[in-house]
Image (cartoon, rainbow, N blue to C red; front, side, top):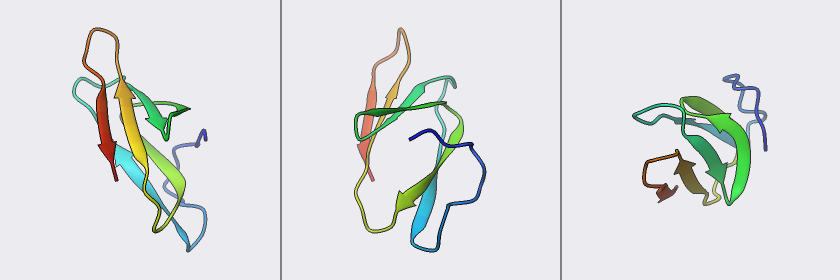
Length: 68
């Protein structure tokens, strides 16, 4: 699910999420799949009306999970 990070969401039936963390540099996983991105980043081409499990992972920090 790698994304170029551009603001273009892909189509009218898709959206994007701006994901940030403090500190930055956390790996971003969506639905257990590594996006190849680190925070801060914009993840696009997400289908509207779907739930997504966001997982942020950074060495020496607790993992963060959120369903959106």
